[in-house]
Length: 171
Image (cartoon, rainbow, N blue to C red; front, side):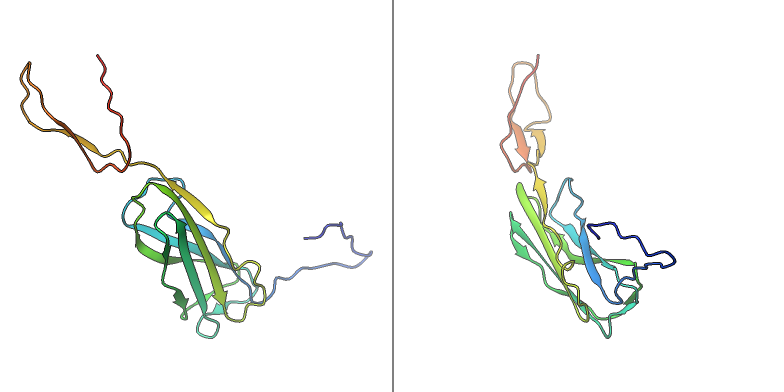
């Protein structure tokens, strides 16, 4: 971008051409934030060829790295893309994990970066951190007995919750 407007001299045209090779990481695609999370969340990021030439991953491979900090800190195995192509302006989603556990309540900070071969522009190779807050899971309430007669009592049981629950009664 330019801070000062530039006007071509009369009769001249200015043209901007994207560089031939420039791979960028756009951001986190999944898990969808905000949302409800489970034990087998898919974690994926989107990369984009912002260059003008098609990237051939057999000659210019890219490594995608990712991790989660704070709650359930995890470093995902690096993903090496060394087959196929990506046209200029096209995007590709890269799966870092198909089974990330987000059942614990807390803040999950997702980070990712790419290490492309032959890419001279590194300022767009790191994704801004994405925070996902997993709130408490309420669980399932059930009664201890299928039959309750007037004047008797039964147990009310809560299973599958991961936080403090407040029981309330209404007349």
